[in-house]
Image (cartoon, rainbow, N blue to C red; front, side, top):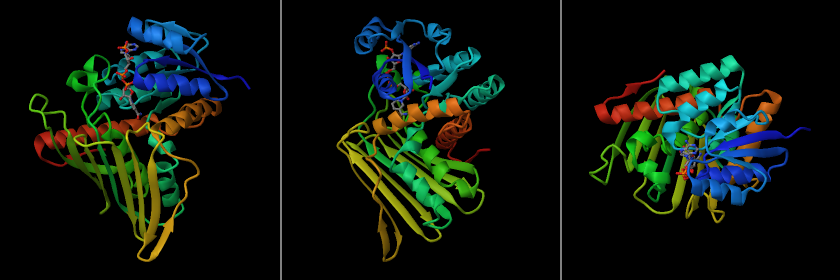
Length: 342
Ligand SMILES: NC(=O)c1ccc[n+]([C@@H]2O[C@H](COP(=O)([O-])OP(=O)(O)OC[C@H]3O[C@@H](n4cnc5c(N)ncnc54)[C@H](OP(=O)(O)O)[C@@H]3O)[C@@H](O)[C@H]2O)c1
């Protein structure tokens, strides 16, 4: 079988993991890496002998041998590069957030559909042996009909990123779009039987007066058309990486937790339990969970989707929803009101 060939744009901390995991996967080939600075290009050349290292991302897009363009750059660049890649006829794996504006997400989805290309968004928790298994248990009906979901993360402060982009509002978009966006995606995915969200109410605050609209503490309540709801919450003023998830249905609760020094650690502890009252079931996972294990599965799953012409694990419509929920949450923090979404 012909390999599926990736081109990578962005060789920062996460881009380096994308590159390594693409190269390690059976049936995938890494053809080119585009990196902005000479230092990043040198690192890419040292780490990946035989892979073309390019300074302008447009040279990745014009490369005939590339099937999928993997976009792992600061958030503000997502729309511009994804648009150009789709225009060039490439399939894309686009890191979250899909874009910084809802309208841009619509534009990308319309272009992907016009060009008949796969647009996959990097919400890799869907592929997790832990967080994905939660959805599996819901589908198996072990808790009946989901009525309430909570996803909570406590962690150490964000890294700065290349040239401090994560602490620059213009370049990051917001801190809600940076990590809580994964939890909006999970909550919506878990609550699928309730239909789509209808409104979001949120609160947030910052521990640093110089960046009042980059929230260290953030909580959002998502309402669905019936009486179902979900809560997404994150604090960045903590330590380690500790995520908890709870999905409560008419017949019981699924409770999951994952803890480690950071999301990419292979020294994690985790637990998945479901039950009601005295009837408790401890789930054994098929393999450990962690961001890099999920990323490894994601680059393969997206290639498989491209090969088979099937939807990727997280589509452009899912990416549009997670972006829209984040932006609605921020509007709610600014206005103090619930914000409708549709
Ligand atoms: N799905 C997840 O769980 C997850 C986890 C982490 C990050 N992410 C996302 O991945 C993206 C990158 O994050 P990161 O942590 O890797 O950030 P990072 O370490 O700051 O890396 C960003 C990289 O983008 C490069 N870059 C900037 N402009 C470019 C351009 N025009 N062409 C090519 N490369 C360019 C930078 O180049 P220089 O090195 O030369 O400055 C840097 O290497 C962000 O969107 C982030 O939200 C997702």
